[in-house]
Length: 117
Image (tube, rainbow, N blue to C red; front, side):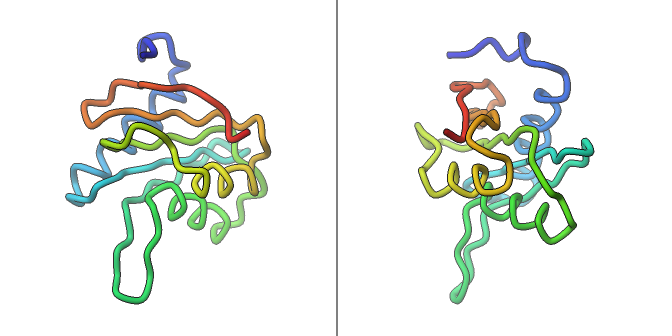
């Protein structure tokens, strides 16, 4: 388990935004990413008959669609015990393998801080 209070304030902000998206939209996951200019993109799980995206994939897609060229960090709030490889790949595609990825539980407690690797 990671001490959330030890996170950089900007990293803690994206965890809080991801948690808010999950709660507000009543979806299984909330996610947020921060681009190279400090802009944040917040998303929830997309589960339509014709389109299924995790919250982190949606947040990355929103960043790309808004013109982001890179990512500084990503956060996902979920009950899951790990960030799926497909989510890490989406972060890696835009931010590179060293982009920090924070996994937090529904209460906002960061359980893992890793990279998109």
